[in-house]
Each structure stands twice: as structure tokens, then as C-alpha cells.
Image (cartoon, rainbow, N blue to C red; front, side, top):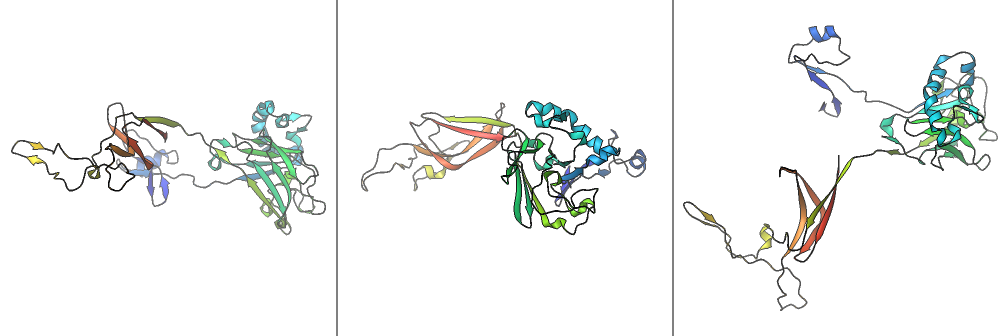
Length: 331
């Protein structure tokens, strides 16, 4: 992969292995490119959260699109019944294959490995005022109404955390007087708001004259497991109390090495600067080697330097100190 400007794209050089992209036909590969040419591809850089209203009438009239979407989730829903009975595809709580429901699909690029349990929240507003709210308060996938108090505690749907789906089946009214063109197959009939109509918009095929009175917020958080290596660097008593930093020795000393035709010798009697604080201005405190550790070098098994960890604040190291520095590396 390479990046030009801000748009990354994959590329392959035509060579003897005959590797190419699936989007390039064999004829294009043979006729449009010479050996050594770079074949460029593209990534799908756009995605969005989709919302589908699956009317039970579509099942009764034999529409297969609805049935395919639901049957694709059947085994997954039944698998999660060990967490909550509301996941069941078919039970006394409802027949999802024949229910009116809202299917919200969230691509994994928005949440990573899975949706975070307890983070999914649905809010419905009418002309800017909150009229209803759903929350995954039990962290078991049940979307429970927490506002208003009427019907509070009712389960309006379930969340598939790892798969990124939200199914809303709640059909009770959320407002005493407000009505709108919510049903996808009833463009001339007004309905009271309910959770199965969550995320309805004028682009769904119904009149948009009043649908703008509703607005929605879907909140969620994602989780992503990142492999981490934890390392410890130890500096025991009496270790790492010398520094090659020029400020480690007293200033004003001759530090020029002695050289000859076949040798070079560094000065061996340079005095180290004493930075031990004194309680009195004219009293020289007892000398002690003190260093400040600001970086830790990381080596592989062959003693090759593979990284340097920089400390946010240097650590003061006295001769009698035992220090352990903990480092974490995200892979």
C-alpha cells in the first residue's frame, strides 16, 4: 500500500508471479500493462450506519429481502438467548420473522472489535424535546426504556454486540398526541411514534412534510483489544550512577584527551560535580553520585537497539536506590 496526499491505495507491480487485483480482468492484465508497470487499486473509503424498517406485511406478501436479512441473524439471535430470552428468534415474547421491527446495522469501522456493553443509547426528540430514551442498562443486550416513566422498564429490542446490529421491536406509543408518516408502506397514514420507527427519515419513501419534527441520537462506544508487551527495566543499587553528559563533571576542567602517534587517552581524574543540596550556604555537603534517568534503551536478544522509551519526567537515581521502570508497548 502507498499513500498519495491523504488517500491510501494498494498497488502491485506486474511481474512473473502474475499477481493482480480481482477488479482487473485477465485481458486487461495482459494487454494494458507491461512487465514492471505498477497496477493501482482503490479502497472502499466510505461507509455509514444503515437503518431498515422491516414491515410484517412484507413477510405476508412474500417479499424475500426482509426474510433474508432476518434469517441471516436467526442463529446468532438464538445463540444469545443464554444471555437474555429477548434474543430468541421465536418465543412467547414474539416472532421476529413476523414482527414489525427496525434493523440498524453498524459497520465495524465505527466500533472496532465489538460494541461496548452498556454503552448503547437511543434518544428520540420531538421538536427538540426528549420524548423517549432506551438504554442497555443491564449490559446484557436488552434495550430498556428509561424515559418516560410510562412503559419504563419495557424491553424494546436487543443489541448484537460483536456483530454490530440493533433490533428494535417496541410498538407502544411514545407520545400522547404527536403522529407522523412512519410506516414505510403507509404513505397516507399517520402513526404514533414507537421504537420500531426509530431513525425514520423522509428518505425512507414517505412524505417528508412532518417527519422533520423528529430527530434521533444513537450513542455507542466500541472496544478494541490491542496486544501489549509489558517490559521492566531495573536499575539496582550502585548501578547507573555515572553519566556521559558533559554536565556530570565540574566545569572548568581540562577535558581534552591526550593523543599521540598511536594512542588517545581520556583524562582519568576529572572531578564529578556534587549536586547534593546543603542546608548551609558555606558548607560542602557529603559527595554522592546522582544521575537522572530520562531514557531507556530496548534491545533484542542479539543486542540490537530496537527502541528507546522516553520518560515524561526524568527519575532521580541515588547510589542506594533500587528502581524499576515499567514500559508497555502496543503492538
